[in-house]
Image 1 (spheres, rainbow, N blue to C red):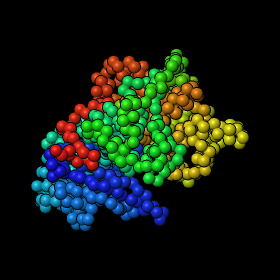
Image 2 (tube, rainbow, N blue to C red):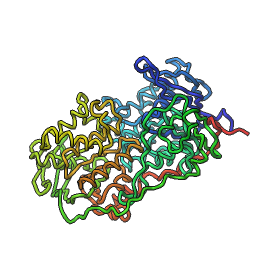
Image 3 (cartoon, rainbow, N blue to C red):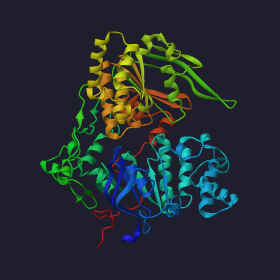
Image 4 (cartoon, rainbow, N blue to C red):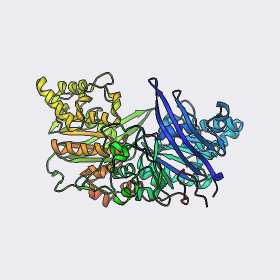
Length: 620
């Protein structure tokens, strides 16, 4: 295979952002290529440069971003020197991008089909009727039910998965040579994610499209992509065939990312997760960027910047000691000895006959119907189900954010079936909630000290000295330091913000904490640290959790019991091991069958290709 087969070739690309009068390198000296019909994945933590790299290829960088070095060759043309008019002829036509949030990519005031038809009119000059026919054909191709009727509906009338199908249809309308997918399934249910992945596989076989798949989900990348690049601080630190990289990582960062993942079938009672160390300092200039966090570091790592070394038939690693890393195998597992779940013979939370109906446009939508269950002190109940199944509505009624139309909620034998502000101080202190996006629940104008002290002042008895002692204990428990007290939420990372939200919830020593997707917006490394933190706090405080999540691996790991919801009803409820290992309800079996394949085994895609260090085909 010759270099001419490359649809995309990125050579020594460096991207900088101008920040506060200085320059910040977001992508550094990156080189790779993708062939027609091939899928390459990019993985790494937030801030590693994944999205910046995707935006740079499309030349969609913000005003303060610029390419300072390198080339981006697409179908033989370098995109870097092109002007706006030349780029407009390529964007959406020969290169297309699918973003994480489909709702933000669709115009809410335009009918769904019109948004695809607009692509045909703009690029092909088609008339309205012919553009409509082509758009309906594309809606049918992306497997949207009733393509003719779907054309005339607005985005808000579709589910999240259906919106993503429409966005994919827009991206594929002009049969692009390159499709860039930036976290295209994040936030989608496991069943919808499986359908979207299957759709990608089908479309690749039809169009022979090259795919750049950007994701923090290692399991998903292993399912979709033949090759993978691992980004850290803007650099490619490991590349190679996906299966080889994930089965035999040769860079400490890749090894650490894989160790952070929740193993299939694992539970908190059998093993502890291994988060990446945070690193106590910035790397030295011209040194290895991962050195401050690396378990394999030597003095050389602080003095030299490693190149990409050949570390296998198709792998390359930016590590001086890649052979040692490969030989070390996976990190040692921390076994948990003697930890068992609390008995279920007492009752902390008693939910009976909860029902909630929403009325919209003259019709009724039953969100939750006849929900009944109990939760014992010290136990964790996982609630799973697709979007629209009623999980969050159930949690909001229990937390007092909504009032049920029927039924009761009893907490510690007290009736709390009312809005939270009408509950007693004791009830509000005993039940706390941690949300998916901590930045939306922390007052941006307050410091962390003010946020935590306000919660304690409102709900916890005691004088200022008691609160100061509690505050110090809380900070230590959530692994934050005194230096974090006088900063504001925007100055913290997403993981640190979630630690503050958890600290606030535990500041009142609650008996029950409702966790609504507490880790779904976090990197895998931060997720591991937060899950360990939640387990430690739960054990220390003997608290109960009501855990809502679409990540079944996380639910299996944390929960003692599982409650499965479908269309507002509880269809299965029992011990976690029994529900996961021997599900009785057909809907539960459907959910479990859709779980993404474990990283390390590529189950879809074309044949693997051998590559050279720079990412191009190996030449004879």
